[in-house]
Every structure is written in C-alpha cells, then in structure tokens.
Length: 292
Image (cartoon, rainbow, N blue to C red):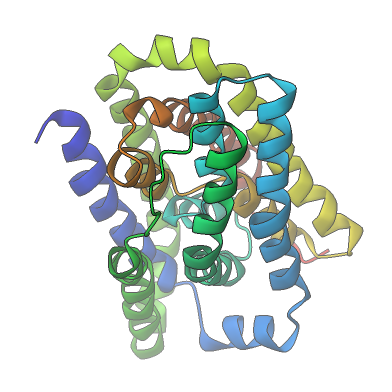
C-alpha cells in the first residue's frame, strides 16, 4: 500500500469517522424528525444531486469538447452522491448537519440505481462503449456509509443523550479539530498526488472548476429560491458541490478499469477542497448563524 492509498483508505476514513462522532454530539433526534416533517429541503437537495448535477456535467463535457475518456470521467463524478466530506464541511460552516447527513445517506442509496443508467448512456454517447456491465459495489457502499457516517453519528447522539454537558463542552474543540484535520488531509492529498497534479489540471482543471462552482451556485440559488433558511442553504450548497470522490475513483479504476478516467476526479477533488475551505473560512468564523 503506497502513501496515496494509505491516506485514502485508512487515514481519511478514520479521520472522518472521528469527526462524525463529534458531529453526532451536536445532534438530537428532533433534528431529523423536523426534516422528515418538512421535506422541502430534502427534495431540493436530492433534485440537485440526482438530476441537475449529471445534466450540468453532461453539458460541460460537450461545451468543453472533452475527449471521450475525460468526458466519461466527468460524468462518473457528476453521477456520484455527496460523501462524508460534505458532512464535515457543513459542520464547520455551521450548516444544517442533520439535513446534510440525511441527503448523503439517501442520495448514496438512490445512486446505486442511477449511476449505472447515467454511465451506460455516457459510455454510449461519448463513444467509449466497452460493453462493460456496470455493477456498483453495493455492499461496500452501504458499509462505507454505515461505518464512516451513520454509526459514529449515532454513537455521538447517544453520548449527548446521556451526558449533555460533556457533549456541549466538546462542541467547540471538535469543530476546531475538524478544521485542522481537513487542512491536514488536503495537504496530504496534494503531497501524495503531486506527480499527477500538473497533468490532471492541464487536462481537466478548468472544466472541473466550472462544474464545482456551477453546482454549488445551483445549490445556493435553488435553496434561496424556495426560501430555505441560511443553515439549510449552506447544507444544500455544500451537498450540491462536494462529491464522493472515493466512490468515483472506484468506478473509474476498478469497475471501468480506466485509470485515465480518474484524472477529472482528481482535479475536482482539489477544487472541492479549496472551495470547501473557503466556505469553512467564511461561515465557520461566525459565532452564530441564525435561521433566517
């Protein structure tokens, strides 16, 4: 296992699980029941992720006249749901954490059905049809969601339920720790992929930046259009623009057996961390975000 694999398969998941534990200590069951009772925010977030994001990715692939391999790589990325990283950024930005976690979980489950459909069409349209049968690692995907997100958050909620004073004391330290871990992971990702960085940015840097900004802009615009409060707007903005890069890489390299298709995914990851970091800096420094 090289350094890049060590970071992506061990350090990053472990770090995210610890962060999710701290995140759970800020949540109560009412946070989730409120979302279910008023599902407008979930419907907006899922529509952005599952419908508009692939459409934007497809349009950009055509507009930028990407070669077939790069185009399919972009579509892999655009068809993937948000990942645990979006939950981390939402926490530091003081967004609606329960909404973020709910969107990640639901979109991840639904995408098991949507990704094969989207990618089959993309492979045929862009002329790289290799007669590959796309079968997502369903069990691995569910386990990833459970181990990294659902279980740690549930444990954190239990801790808050039984020792609310401890949970409240740890809220600020955990938010600071989340920011520090985010920065360390970002630097580690850059260092581990330094040799691929230049080529990746040359091949897909601009189009992936446009995709990232466009999807985040879509999230913010739609949330405001339907009069969601600021905390929910932050969550939907982040969920619309932070994708599950790990799942995307698995699809490109393990299922489609094409390492080159991972180039747009790697480039997007850089922009994703940068724009996520900017949002964390802008919103995280506020002492409080009200509901308006």
